[in-house]
Each structure stands twice: as C-alpha cells, then as structure tokens.
Length: 367
Picture: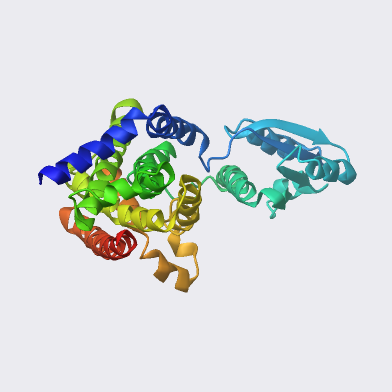
C-alpha cells in the first residue's frame, strides 16, 4: 500500500508540475464548457426569408406581417420575380422563400383552401425544416382565426406542453451532457498519455525496476485519472446548477456514483491506448480515434433511435450513451433509483471488461 500510494502521488505530481499539462487539465474544459453551452444548439434564429407576392392582396399582406413578427425571423426580403428569389437562395442570403399565388386573397375570401409555396435551402436541411415548422404553425394559426371569423365557432386546437423542459431551453440539454463528454475526454487523455509519457521521457525503465508490481503500476495510473475526471465532471455539474441555473431534480449521490463508474469504464480504454503508443503524439491521435465514434453513437448529437438497427446495438457498448441518460434524467426528470440502476449496470459491465482487458494488455507490455 505504501508503494502504491507513492505511485499515485508521483503520478499526480507529474500532472501538476508540468505547466503544459496543467493548462490542458484546466483551460480546455472550461473553454469548451462555455463555448459548447452557448454555441452548440439546434435552435433556429435570425432567419432571413424572401417573399414573392403575386397576390398583393389583404390576406397575403397579413400573413407576411405575421411571419415578419415571428421571433426567429430577422429580415423579410421582398422580391418581384422567381429569378430574384432563386438568386437569393443560391447565394445563401435567405433560408426560405415564400411565394403567394395571384389568387391567394380571393381564395381566402371565398372560404376555399388557399395555398402558398415554400422553398427551402436544402443545403441547410435541418435549419430549413425547423424554420418551416414555425411557418406552418403561423399559417395554421392564421387559418384557424379565419375559420372562426367565418363560422363564429372556435376551431379545436391542441395545447402543447413540453414536459421536463417547458421553454425548450437547449442549454438544459447541452450543459448536463458536457459533464459526461468533457470528463470522458479528459480521463481518456490523462490515462492515454501516462505510459506513453514515461516512454517518451525515458523513465519507463525506471518504473519497471521499482518495487511496485505491474498491477500496482496499473492502479497507480488509474486512480489519478479517476480523480481528475471526477473533479472535472463535478465542476461541470456545479456550473450547470449554480451558473446556468438548470434545475437539478435527481439524486446527487447516485449521479456521482455513476460518474465514477463511467470514468472507470473509459480509463481502461485510455490505458490500452497508452500501452501501444511510444510517444504522446501517438496517444493523442489514439484518443481522437476512439473518442469520435463513442460520441457519435452516444446520442449526444443525434438521437440513437434515428440510427440503423445494427448501430443501435453497437451503441449499447458506448459508456457515454448510458451516462448521458443518467445525467440528463438526474437534472430534469428526477430519475428514480431503479431507472438509474438500469443504466448503471451496463456501465459496471463496460468498466469491468475495459479494466480487465487493459490490465492484461498493460501487464503483457510491462513484462
């Protein structure tokens, strides 16, 4: 235990003594927290729309005025020809184009079905579909008002309530997720650099002749990464609660316990990468090669349900996927202990498999 404690202290000191390592441990996580929190969003705002009004009647003017007053619309550009409308979309100056036919107001007055054409810039498909849904909602509300005026009866309408996130604040989703993503990246990087750094600095042979055995060396490399990853994850959770004012409704103790399981599951991957790398540059490239697939299949950027069936099965092996479900549910959903356990046991299995595999690989390399 004495030699193990010395190894852990030595490893922590090696991180804290090097100014570049200290900068990596402190600077990038905080920078990424604030950049991702404000920049990573699927909300659509400041949209420019082009309008070609062949009708120039009362009702087309009314609908254009409602579109211009929407929160997501920044500017409405009026055009007089289809060529001008096409040119604005081609030059990416507008996201959407709306064309009113010449009989639009007449059809509205006659109580017939009035239609308008919406052209979407397919190069920005996701933003275009979101903006179109807003326009569709505006047009639907406009049509319901006209129907009420014509019949004197209130048309049935659906009252939409967003459970767990009433105002659809995208930051409520992204900030809790960052506690998992950033702590994973840092824990992977720390462990991947550990043995590679020893080789590059020429201290690897000195490590082998110490009284510590291979298992003690592995534990000595694992514990500092676990401490650093848990510290970074805790800072992200605290920032979400205290700085971004995101409601936390679950159990903090359960979340911290699952965070330790999650970090243990990625530490094994980092140690395996480190054992095969001779330089720190190779270790960083290895971390990048592993991190990108884990993030992509975790549901952080796109829903897992939208992926092919075989990839959904593969995503079960991503520790980040299970932890994201736990941390997001702990913040907004008051996730029950039974549901936390249903996502925690896969983390425990993944942690066991990766740590055992890392132990076998690293022991073989050390010997």
